Image (cartoon, helix red, strand yellow):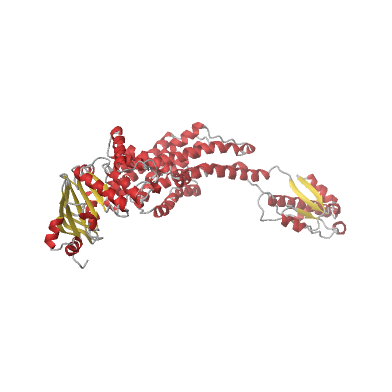
Length: 390
Length: 240
């Protein structure tokens, strides 16, 4: 037990002094939540725009069609009348989002019953509201034109419905809340990544790093059992994984209140209790991650080689998450047998405050812990072989 | 006291050590000589328990390196070819780490580290991180770390590599001190000159086999050469 503690203490001191380890271990944990909140806020704001905000529209030559402009004003619009030399350039420059141009010939053509074609200038590649404003204005003008058309048909004694035998009625069920939940679902994925990143460099430094610096050979000629040696290293890696997760949860608790969820009538609060719950659920995964990273890094002879291997390994725990998302898997006891997938399912439930089954908690902890122990045993047996030095 | 009997070691098809038998006594300095790639390092690695012999056996103070590696580990101090220090730890922390791995209690360990720092004249840099150390400073720290548990047997793998004159002289004094303390010192080298005024016995290895073991005097009479370098070349065979 003394050898274990000695190794653990040394690896922690050694790595806490390494700037590269610190940056790699904790930057995702600290910045991830900020990124997440920014994305959430952006999606919510654009989504909310659809329902309430007025359409901003610039009209050039409004005096040519006062009837049309007053119709538009009665809709949910904010119209600014301007005289622009080159309206197309104004949209290209970005000073205006949407411009309707009414030519001087409008009134004459209108009373003559000729077709009026009005340029509606917009940029379809721009993000945000421009596209949606364009669609709305187009709809308004179509309805206006249709109304006029119907009136003219009626004056001539024709039933207007003859022009529209089939109509489409659009029913969009995507609510802002649903969109927000899609993003919320990426949170457990981020969390699994944070755990793996926390132990990433430590796993390399304690294994391939020792080999590269020639410190492994003298270390192995010390009278400390390989079991204590390797477990000390894995535990140090686990501690960094755990620290990374704690930082992430703290950073998340600070960031989440900035998400404008109240606008869509939702509330998201990751309480201290939930955070502790998430940490406990993730604990076996932290050990599993440390063992997996250590085993794989032990095969590498140099830092660079280990980095290459581990970058691939980090993708592995995210695979089940992506597959589960695609297939839309529900929480079940079988699911709890898979490390990373079981934790992310449980953590999703904890985040949105759904009840979690005890059986699921126990099965998840036991299987992930057992797999982690198996990998740790594999690492120990690797260090018992002399080929670790050659 | 170190004894090897019929040691063999092969890595795949390469036979690094073939039927090597030799011994190194307490209170003596024994040199393991040989050209590069002769099997010196492999022999020392077998003695320090990090690799297992393919055949034959070796004993340190009577303990078998294969069947009782833990007992052997606590009776040897090893200075490996690459010093293998931790750059982000101070000299003192490096030494303390190995002392703790040997299960030393805190107070005796701190006292021992203090005396080693004095012995090896390291007080100037003992609390600095190893990262910027010169090769001479590194060797001193690695040596202190190797003998922190006061081992009876000391194995040094090409210890003078990369050392300047002053550091080499300091190392020689330390080796002689080990000898007067009654320890068994076994060090490897490929330079004949550096062993002449230091060692009592030489073991000459060439092409994996032990070609000669005995005192320097016997080396001269056996080969009929007054010059030790000539004698060395005669023993290992001029064609290597």
